[in-house]
Image (cartoon, rainbow, N blue to C red; front, side, top):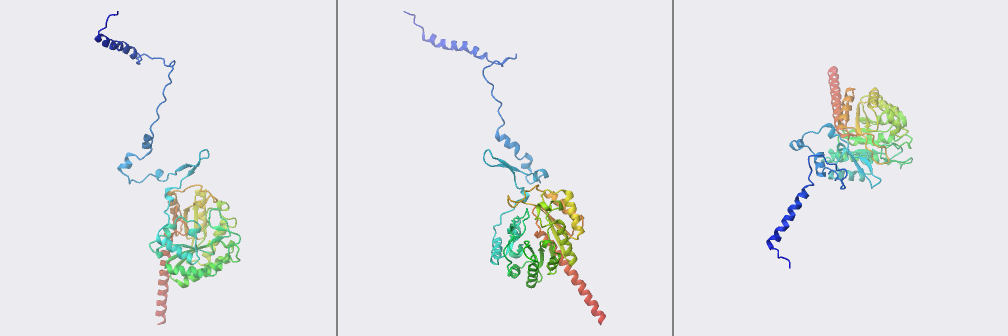
Length: 409
């Protein structure tokens, strides 16, 4: 019979075994001498990538942004063009986001709705709507109708030309002219009590006079109902028929505008084939020759691929033809069927062109990403110029009358 083992002895035996095993387990420690691990059967773990949270911190605002959140951004930050990847898997593409300085609010206020209701009630159209102008919320959103600005578009909403930048509807045979449009236009403007109004119109190459007499009748009706209202007309080129230009100019408007749209080199690719750079210059020069006191005006879009030298050349040609006012604005693609934007011009570049135009002798220049040919800031300036000229003429007439009366006595 086996000898009995004391309980204390059996309990102490287990730790003794563990003590003898521990030193063997510690042999796996790393020693100072180099160890060749190339023969190790266990694969090494890949290095852990930085956490996403850390990535966000690195790409986010700096400490200075928190200390001084209202500090102005550097030009590189303010004018940074952002991109985004869109589309399903396998067909993703990178698109350019609209720059922050070109974003405008959606028009929703009551004055916008009232103005639109008046226009529809009188069957009138505006270039603001037809050309999808980004300034519609600003121009139509005044505190009252008299504070708002709307550019009335004459001769319907369908053009006989197809410029590659314009979203106005086109047709070779548009509907006939509305004979009541001149009267309705004058009545609408009388109700609004505006001090300055801009009239524009579609090209009507289907008409013998290009709509020149319709233009003239509209201006005369406005002047009859609102003699103090200043009228700017933004006309087409009447296919180069200068006699039609003279008919419009004699109607009594205060500002005659015709847009060259772009530089001479890009004109065949941007405008309709019937529109020509030199022909537009002839229109502006003829208007000035017919009425030398008349303010002439034109507009140029930037971002179509033009060079600085080409823009400079266009400005020089305008001054040679005595054009008084020029505006610069960013071309914005209305739909995918139209020309793509080549470049988004920064506000600093627009300011450079404004100063360059003034240095060349232009009476006024409105230049900015959202500036359009009927920009209300420019209208305010021109309105003041016209009022000063009228006051000066009245002073001269008054002085001449006093002199004549004294001579008679």
